[in-house]
Image 1 (cartoon, rainbow, N blue to C red):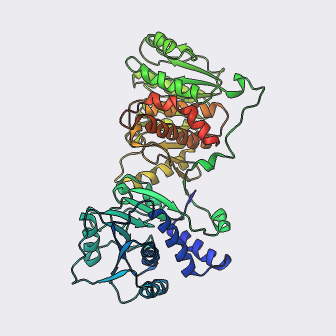
Image 2 (image 1 turned 120 degrees about the vertical axis):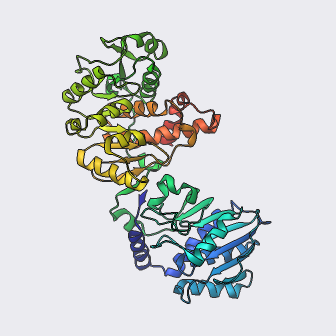
Image 3 (image 1 turned 45 degrees about the horizontal axis):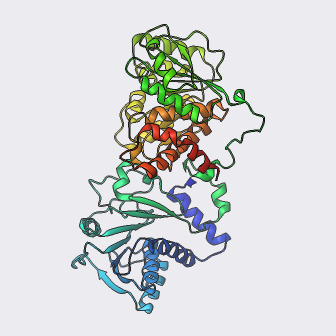
Length: 503
């Protein structure tokens, strides 16, 4: 799914109004109606509903919701936050409809008025400001937002929590921002909703389609995407009846060191479970019995060194190489990694200590094969590029790193983001907090390595690998609970994740 900037969303609205054709007031009715339908799943008839309304089109959406909720038999109070004498034309039309309907209690809230008493069991619908907000919220409106936040009510934001910027960093120290339990975002997720700093404002995000014109959406150029299952229908490879293991690649995984052989085991198992034809895992001598016992399907290449990776002589049998899980940063390993980079001309997968070593030897970066995939967590990425002040800055730095060096960066976390050499970023929609567990990243490396070995383009291998990894984690959490989830569960549910992807 494309993630449009606010400017592009406005263009999409205008294009839809002109070409569907539809009046703007009817498009607002559509937005409010679709939000109302999802609200019915979240609220109960015995709850008091407060709809806090600004004076623009976001407030107009809220007026539609208030009217429809009242017509459905809910107790609704519409709180109009009068911060100006002016309002949008569509707000005014829906305001008049609400007055004529006479089923909603309307409260006019001005700077010197007492705020309404919100009880614990009440529901607050936030429709004060939409995604077009361009300045910090302070003063009277800021006080209204703080009054909403200190209540224990169930809070639903329409389109975006009021006070949150859609396309840039929001400084909560200098602006009031609604802390929603749910955000019903209209047609597209907003860029700011993918970042950790804003999770406490956005809560659970639900994209509400309002049928903006598909021709505009198809043609518009964007640089950010939200990855969904539908994105893989046309790229997922099917297996020929007469295929054999040689058709699905031979991957080399360089992994493990003394005390860290579990990483090699997990990455190897994940690589095999994702469908690679053949896998050879190169490990130090002391890891031989471990890898042979734990994953008998894996072929083993044994290093000359007892405890660390010190080099590998023949790379001719492999069509793709991954390096890093549990590798360690021994001096011999650093020298061996440098030689590996110099001798491999095709895209590789770099993870964990391989990234840490490169971070200490940044002059190697220009020699890394174009199209390679890095899978860092935030601290590892920081070692590659330096510190940033927030997730927005980090994502833009990630984007620039991919463009400058012709590589893909899979920055792990909630909504794991994959940046591409063309400057695009893909935010993942699968995964859960239970996956924040030891070995989860090793499994991801194995998954991506496997897809790359099966001749998926590096871009698809990275994005689909992240999606599969998160989907398997979601299935595991559903079966076993988030608290009990371990990396092996992710690997064990990869088959079910694949089947889900096909359906």
